[in-house]
Image (tube, rainbow, N blue to C red; front, side):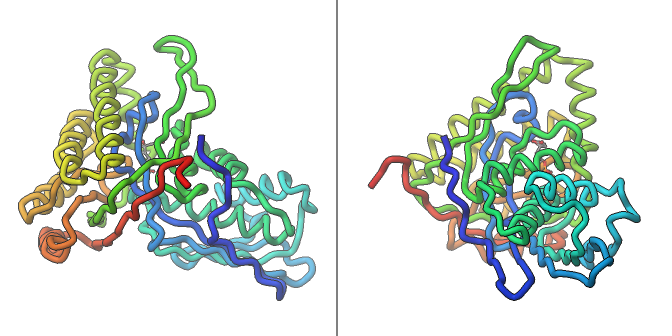
Length: 344
Ligand code: PMV
C-alpha cells in the first residue's frame, strides 16, 4: 500500500494568491496492458511541471482561466463543456466552497501537450491543489488523485488511472487494476498501488517526436482490436504484464543493465499492439544505435515521447543522436533510488 503523505510541492501564498505545481510522468513499462488489468510502472518526472496560480478577482468577475501555453483564455460560464470548466466546480463542491467565487486561474506548463508525459493530469492536479489551498483545505494525495481521475475519464473515456496516481503521489509506483468478473464484461475494483523499490539510480533520456497524439485515439483503437480479437490481445497484454514483473525485480535488485532488453521487448510488444509510429521507431532505433541500454515508446503512442535508458557516460552522446534523428526536444531525467518500505 502506498502512503498518503503529500509531496512538498505545494506553495500556499498568504497574500491572496495560491500556487501549486505537479510533475510530469513517464510510463517505464506496461502502458495499454494496464487498462486491461496488467501491472505497469510509472515514474514522476519532477523537472517538468505544470503550474497553477489562483488570484482573487474583482467582485462579479466569476472564474476566468488563462492558459497561454494552451493558447486559451476563457470565462468558465462561457465554455461550460470544457473539461477544466467542469473540473473547477466539481472540486469546489468537493471542498464545500461557495459555488461561484471570483477567481482568476493562470495555468502554465513545461510538459509537452498530448505527448504521453501526463500534461492533462498534471494541470488538473495542480489546479485541484491550488483550489484546495484557496479554500484553506488540505486534500490527501488519494483525494487529489480521485478528483483528477474523474477529469481523466472525461478526457480519455477508459483511463486506467495510472497517470493521476503517479502525478498526485509524485513517486515511483507499481500500479495494477484489480479485475472483477470474467471477460468480456470485466470490471475493475480500486487499483493496487505500491511504492516501487529502486535500488540504484536510473539515467533516462526522453525524446519527444513533436507529434501530438490525443491518448483517447490509440486507446480507442486498441479497444476495438481487443474486442475483435480478444485472445491475441489478451496474450499480448499477458506478455507485457509478465515483463513488468521482471522489470520490477531488476529495479529492486539495482540492476539497470538487465532493464535494457526488457524495455526493448516492451517496445516490440507495443509495436504489435499497434501503437508505435515511424517517428517513435526512428528515435528508439537511434537511441539504441548510439549505445542506449534499451529504449521504448512511452505513453499511449502514435506520437509523443519515447524513453531511453542510458549509462551516465553515454547520456550526452545518446541525446545528440536523438536530436540528430529528429527529436523535437530531449529531456534528461535521473530517477533517484528509493528506500524499501519499512526500512529504517
Ligand atoms: O496519457 P498517456 O499517453 O501517458 O497514456 C496513458 C497510458 C495508457 O496505458 C495508454 C492509457 C491508460 O489510461 O493507462
